[in-house]
Length: 268
Image (cartoon, rainbow, N blue to C red):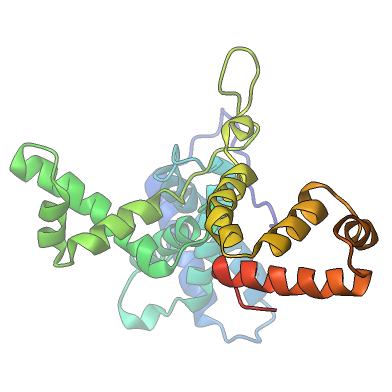
C-alpha cells in the first residue's frame, strides 16, 4: 500500500482552521468542475486530496486501539478519501465533507469486516456479531443487568440458536499463537493441545475381538493365534498342525472373513 503523509507544518506557522477548510472545499469543487481529460485536473486533484488529509486522519483516529496499527487505519481512511474525491458531484447539493465522511467511515468498517478476522467467517456472522454487540450494550442499560441469550434474540428478532452461532463466530476475530507462553517454565500453548490416542481404538477392537474369535472353530482359532500372536509363517503353521501350506492359506482367509463379519466389517 502506498504510504501517504500529511504535509509538514512548522511550529511557527499558524493556520486558520476555517480558512483551511474553505480552501479545501474550493479545491475539491474546482477539481470536480473540470472534465475528466482536462490537463489541470490531476494536479488540482492531488492538491484537493492533500488539503482534506486532516479529515482522514481525524476519522481514522476514532477506530484506534482496536488492534490495528494507526498508520494502517490512516491509509485505509485516505483510500476512502480518494474514492470520495473521485466520485464527488457538487451539483447534487451536498458539500464534500458530508459526502466524504460516510465514504471514509464505510471504508474503515469494511477494513475491519474483511481484513482483521483471524479466521474468515461468513459475512452474515460478522454482521450478526456487530448486531449482538450493539444489542448487548443497549440492553445492559435498559435492563440494568447483563442480557441473556433470550433477551438478545428477542431484541434482534432472531432465534436463540442464531445468537449462539453469532457468539461462537465472534471467537474467530482474534486467535492466539501456538507459541504463546502459558507457564513460567516456558511451555507453550501448542504443547497443551491433545491429539488422537490410538490406544482407545485398539482397546475397543480388543473388546470386540473376543466374541468374534469365539465364533471360529478350534483349528481356525489356533491358526489365527499362531499367525498373528506367534508371528509364525504359513509354512511353519502347516508343519505344526500337520497340513499343507496351501490348506493353511485357505483356512486363514476363511477365518479372517469370519472375523471381519463379526467385527461389523464387509467379508473379504
